[in-house]
Image (tube, each protein chain N blue to C red):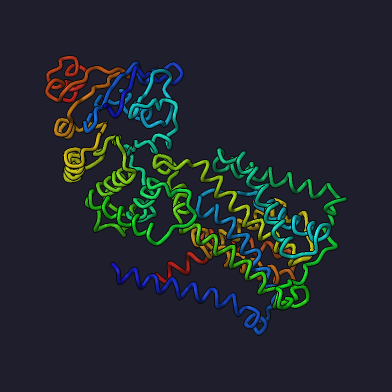
Length: 321
Length: 249
């Protein structure tokens, strides 16, 4: 028993080390394969968003179809701060996280009693409210054209300045650092007693309740945490593009995140990152060939759901075992 | 002091009166069995005790405090644990993980986003002790969903025990089991009652199990308390024989 568990641990650590090695070296291996660093940055940011959706979907068993709202709010919070308040990247990111997270916490409290399809519908509705606010309030948000006229600012680290605006690699490592913080926090929480109660709720809500877990309160906390992570991803997305777009709040964007999570494997921690990578790379490659790139991504999604219901990563894990 | 005092509890669903003016007291360390024909209101009665829904009228006193309007999880926090007629477990987790969740909640850790190594060690220790109590220590790393029906039920009881309850509610612990498994679970419940001194209320269909285990038997029929007494008294009670035992014979 101990032999197999220690072997499992070694496998786990090896996988973890490989993932981080791949991410750390991405700027160096992507170029020879025909990619470019900015593409890897997008994968990280959208991967973080998909992992945030999955924090709720895969580990609490709650499907939100309006999570783009918190993503978009994170982006607008960051963009508006940079444009109107202070030219500081860290402060702008914190503002984005807070805007997404706090709005998520407030609205989350209203919807934790709903379940399943009703929960999903209400999250879509809330998300669309923010979409239309951003769309209509042109004087502040730029309306349909999106919020322009801001740019990420160099990071002043005391000893030296990190030019994340023009140096793609520096920016990638900045985003990777943020990604590591967020993903580290997620992994930490999932391993904690609170994380165990999330999984208990996913597995059997009635049992969880009769073990003394106030299910609604725990779902609300998980939802709120997920919104903060989502706001973080949105904040980084605004920095990636130097632009915030109402489409980032739209439910179709939420659908993309759910798709990445399910395609990659929603029962695995890293699955959504893989899903996001496949999604972003396919989008980048196919959209240069055809405007209908989404039909191909959709086809792949259908194939994955039909033949690998545990997602791409779930399939790899099983064939390994 | 009595662990549980139920005073004149009634539950209506529209026009149907599922439980009608039932009273029951359970003393510390007592094992009380509830029997009755199908549809007698036994499980509804259990749901009232454990807070699945509130009674239409009447009061429920637990450890001297009125818990009639408390939610399920608040009752669990005060020391009430239950199992279900159809086993409720976390099938995709291991036996160990199932019991660990209950142990962490009971230890007051449920909202903690971190845990120290020492605390985790203490919890693991406690989980192992609980598993030993139900003789599942050798299956700790198996997925609960893969176990036999009897072992799944034992795992469910282990989760209830991990909550360190003052009162254990077991809804048909031997439902759907063969002789071997019924024996296994009966022995377990007996051990919990005799050696560990748990106060237990159980619903049971199998009369051998009931007469074997119970200090006291309550007979429900059409939502009413038909009779209560020692197994000897119940066996001799004519109205019970007419309503229930007579049918079975």
